[in-house]
Amino acid sequence: MPNFSDRVERISISGIREVFEAAGDDAINLGLGQPDFPTPDHARRAAVDAIEAGKADAYTENKGTRSLREAIAEKHRTDQGIDLDPSNVIATAGGSEALHVALEAHVDDGDEVLIPDPGFVSYDALTKLTGAEPVPVPLRDDLTIDPAAIEAAITDDTEAFVVNSPGNPTGAVSSEDDVREFARIADEHDVLCVSDEVYEYTVFDGDHRSPMEFSETDNVVVINSASKLFSMTGWRLGWVYGSAERVDRMLRVHQYAQACASAPAQYAAEAALRGDRGIVDEMTASFERRRDLLLDGFDDIGIDCPTPQGAFYAMPRVPEGFVDECLDRGVVVVPGEAFGEGGRGHARISYATDESELREALDVMADAYEAAK
Ligand code: PLP
Image 1: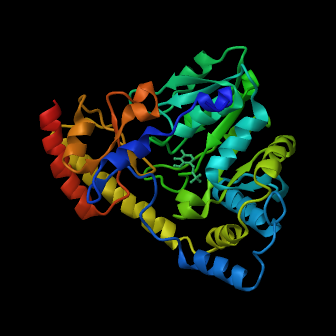
Image 2 (image 1 turned 45 degrees about the horizontal axis):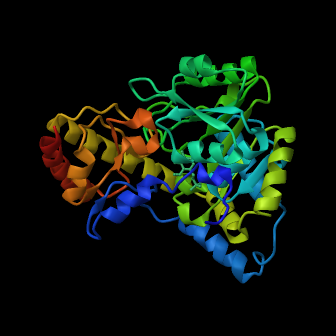
């Protein structure tokens, strides 16, 4: 057997894919983590124009083109009032690489990284790849991230904690009070807060807030991405920002692992950031309608589900066997434990699918629920 690194042997391929593969081709897939909208035309056009003009043939600056980073800084100034200098931004291959460079630059063997449980699958895997220990932190019953639980889990070995609002797999949105607490914890305990904000634009009630707005130190780095903001998952364009010193260290990882984000994708993302945001409002309104449809359906069936306030996921409480009963009937949903032990007893339902399919899926879920309960 080849000699693999201990680090890579600690992780395995995400269980979510296996669920998709087990489903037939005509199954209704409520497992996908991507918006079902096309990338805005003006973003596609900008990439085509850049390619045709020969502007996308060469490496860009390692951090990304100056004009993309200016557009990102402008976005965060306008949306959140954050005074962000373009030199403090690195454009990455999606939010995924942004998470990777953030963790790789800050944590070592033996360090602990607190991650929400259930939480996005990459937090656990990327932490293990750095050699550090992921420490799952339970959510509240309403599936929001609990600052008190984070604070209680901090030890001398804690180097960082990850927060994610709006959340995957929960759809939960942290209140301003909680977000202020994340910032306070990072400041007072001198630990890094990695704030994953890739679903920032998909908030139905209230506003998205970032710990970066409230921290009085430089102990926050923010992950964001064009993937979910502008329905551009295939383009692989995200970004990370933080203090100059932190960006310098993250750039060392990014420079050697990636050189720079894909140039055509950088032009497309810049156009999306600078362009008309009508599509974003349309997507959010549509996700909200579908959330309501799903929750009404759950009510009728008798399925208990904390109300998701953002993203496009719901995480109802379901009996054991529910996921398999759904699969047998041609509806793919993801078992909650794919996102950590804390997800057990739940399923993650992505409602980024059209309303008629959702209605059909609800009929199936009603039968599956009866069969499993
Ligand atoms: N963070 C969260 C919470 C996610 O759900 C995802 C993707 O599903 C990502 C980060 C990574 O996004 P991407 O690499 O497509 O930008």
